[in-house]
Image (cartoon, rainbow, N blue to C red):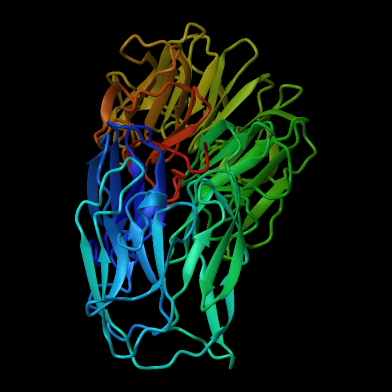
Length: 634
């Protein structure tokens, strides 16, 4: 299925996102002259396609939805020269762009022709490349100067189904007077590009005449050697990756050509995903780490501090990881042998190793750095500005910000290297929250420490705890998730319990207590079962919302929803678990600061919610209230 937008539709448009609302698949392309040439989207009859156009500042300026029909007549999207243009080059080729592939047999001397008065201009007619979307008419000789011409595109043009052009089209234009100089060279930049499936790149072309002068008047026609892999706009040079493989993109002008090599790759299957602050990270089957979103502090581990990258990029270093955790400002991961690495912001020591100032002036590392101390970990968790990990001998260490005692070492002193949680308790798992931390013992008992203003420690008080204290109630837990001011856990039978702040309904149950500095905030100081009777296999929380996956694979979320992070199709918050829209089933889910990501049963990763920094990974900065497939996956 091809989607296009005629020139002039959105005068101030800069980028367009085309998405299939049925499958959540999407791609992004550039807008030229208020429209864009056809791009391929996987769709079937009955699907609903959505086009969103944004201006240069990223603000939406156009939105439309279209139902995929069984058949639709082709239309002419645009021509070059365009209607009414003057001063057209005498050596111009005429380009006609159609909305869908045209049958080869329909390209004849009478279906598309050029007239000067009543005389037919002799020339050759061909497709620009194998996509059959663009027809090119090349006159046999130079056009006459200062002369009116008429392009006629008739209803003899038919698509692959035999449907005729919706209506005949005529385009009048006038040539200039300047004699063109012969073209000597055509150069395409960049000469080589690697794209993910669904990504696009704008290629640039430089045309020079025999005198070495820059030639801006000669027609340039772009073509792809493999349009099923990389589709190029015939007149703009925008290339979109469609499927894994290689293609050569050729720009031709005045009989000379230049080319660029395009390699399109599919994102490897991600076995895990972790939604952090305004960024997200995932692990591939082979243990390679990929991240996307906010990157001003090196959060994505790419070796750069490019402000934001809205699509998956590889973490540098070639390190194989077995586990990964994205925090609010940094990410940490474990190798299969238990060595810990962290990257991103290190303003308060959360990376666990001394780091020099980064390009933004603060302390950070844009590449993975080994955590100091040579410890071997079995579990690691990145919180807001601190990190905790459990070693192979069941000792729990934390490092970073410690103003509320969240490191559990009995002090409130920040630590740039790991320090042991005091108390002699053996742990098997840890979850670092905003300003508190929680851990599980090998006997499934929960302990928490740090800030307790909202009852997030779960010991029945609102007293901060700089050392680990047992969660009240004596429940056994097999999973814990520490968030902003709330904590949730799963019992062996899959019942979810939450405690702490109930702002926006983050606990998924009525508040029985009051907390906060003035004692007015609704909260639960001890674990209370989430309402609804759902049986969960996993639960995750971070910044005011909670999500879980039931044993049947259905995703539910509750709490704060103002950015669409609940995935329900609205921005409403919810006091109780409500199902995520889209009918997907999931194997895992991860709640971020204002977004959520999950791995679907089929292996694809989807994200939803805030996308102002590209943390949804769909190649755009558009937020979504329903799950969107991360770009690059097949």
